[in-house]
Every structure is written in C-alpha cells, then in structure tokens.
Length: 230
Image (cartoon, rainbow, N blue to C red; front, side):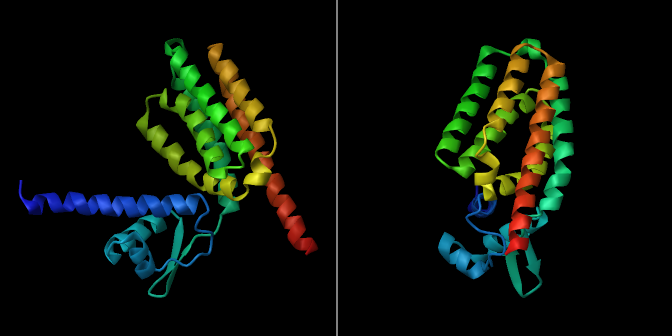
C-alpha cells in the first residue's frame, strides 16, 4: 500500500481527535459560552496545523455548538434554554418507544447489573460534585435500554437530541443534581424493567424526564428572579 493511500487516514484521525476534544470541552463547560475560538491559538495548543481546527469548527457550527461571523470571529454558542426545553417531550417519547421495542424477556442479569452500576456511578459523581461524570452516568443508564431496541437510527437521533441537554445539566450542575429525585426515578425505571413490566417502565421513564423538565424550569426561574433582583 502506498504512502499516498495511507495519508488520508492519518489526516482523518487528526481531524476527529481535534473535533472530539473541542466538542467535549464545550459540552463539559471547559470552554464557556461566549468564549472566542481562534484557530491559530488552538492549532498551536493541539500541536497541529490550522486546517483540522478549521474543519472541526465547521462541524461544531453545524451541530450548533459554535457560532461564527464570517471572517471576524468564532465563539462557543450560548446555551439555548428554550430549545432544550422543547426537546424534552421528544426525548421521553422516543425513549418510551425504545422500551416498547425491546424484548424484556430476553434481558439478562448482566443488563440489569449494568444499569445498577451506572446508577452507582451517578451517586458517586453527585457526592464528588463531578458534573461531567454525573451527566455521563445518567446518559449511560438510559443507553442500556435504548440500545436494547437494536435501532441505530433511534440511538443516533436520541444522542443528537440530548447533546444540548448535557451542556445545560453540566452548566447548572449544583441546582440540577443536588436533589435525590433523579436517583429515585432511576430506581423506579429499573424496578419496572426487572419486573418485565413494559407499561410501568414507560411511565417511569416519562416521569423521569418530565420531572427533569420541571427541575430545569425551576432553575431557570430562580436564575431569572435573581437577575431581576440584581
């Protein structure tokens, strides 16, 4: 195989590495909303040319994670709270569909153990005040039953819908995760799945997301009231 044939693979690896790193930093809040992103500085920090940085920023712009004013600046996109709130009903609808599409009678003890493990990781992350780890554990808990639907298109759509939610959850970690409601809601989901009760599982999943929506709306209301008082 010639060097010319191998080169595009190496370049794609670099592009993906830069893209994944920047995406993670934005979602986890290491790059805060409004932060200016300068391709020359990022290229220097990553030890790469400006080309993979520019291509990564274009991908992130398409995902709504950065905003650009042509030939002037690129910034980390602001948190779109209204857009996030509109996504909640879509997510609980698709997740309840995922449970309907699973064969609970085919679940093994390992499947339930996996969900319990992610729930324990969520508890540990909350106690450690680790926002990124808490959001990741929460997502992985839900991914177990989503993946059991064996529908890659469904998994991809849900992943895209949830990405802005993860930014919000991490940004407002203290208010979102300080209570124990989400943990008890997870317990209800797991109990219903263990009982092979599809309808109870669907109700528990919908309740989890509806209560999460209530929590984020309460947080936004408190922040708005505080800003008004100030």
